[in-house]
Image (cartoon, rainbow, N blue to C red; front, side, top):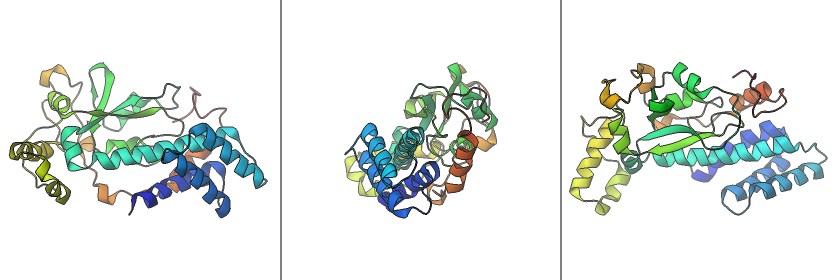
Length: 268
C-alpha cells in the first residue's frame, strides 16, 4: 500500500466520525483535501479549520468549531504518528533508536491516567516513572483507544513518542545482543554507506532490539520485571489501519462530556 493511500485510510475515519460526513462523499473529499494540504506543509491548522468550517456551512451543515479542531488535530497527529511508526521500523532506525518513550508533548489535561494504563498493559516503569518500550512492542497497540500502534493514543491526548537511542536502551537492560539477524533488502541496497564493522554492529544490535533483559536490577534502572505480554513483537506487515469502529466508539464515549480534553472524572 502506498503512503498516500495509507494516509487517506487514516484520515477518512476521523473525518467521517468527528464531522459525521458518512454519506456526504463530496464534502468529505473536500475536507480530506484540506487536511492533506496541512499534512504536506502547504497550510496550517488555523487555515485548515477555517476552510473546513466554510465547507460545512456551504453545504448547510452544522460547523461545530470544537469538532472541526479536534478532527484536524487528530487526523494530522495520526498521520504524523503513522509515519514515525513506519519509519521507525526500518532496520537502520531500529538499530540507532530501538525504543520509544511515552511523553507529554502537548501540555493539557488527559482523560487517561497513562502510568496506570501502562502498568495494566504490562509495561515497565523506569526511574522517575518513565514509560519506555521497544518500537515493536505490543504495548503501543494495547494502550490505544483507537486500536492503532502509534500516537495519538486517544482523542485530544497530548501524549506522543520520544526516540530512545540504543545506548540508553542497552543501559536500561531492555535489549541485548545475543543473535545475528539477516539484513533486509533495503539494508543491502544501502550497505555501501556503512563499513563492515558498522554492519556487523547493526546485525548484533538488531538481534537484541526485540529482547528484554531478565536482569531486573541492571544498573538500578528497572522498577520491575517486564511481563511477558509486553515483550511480544508486532509484525508491521500484519497491522491493520481499519480503526473506523474504534474511533466511532471513542467519539460516542467522549463527546458526551463538556470537553474531550480534561474532564478528570471522564471514564477511560
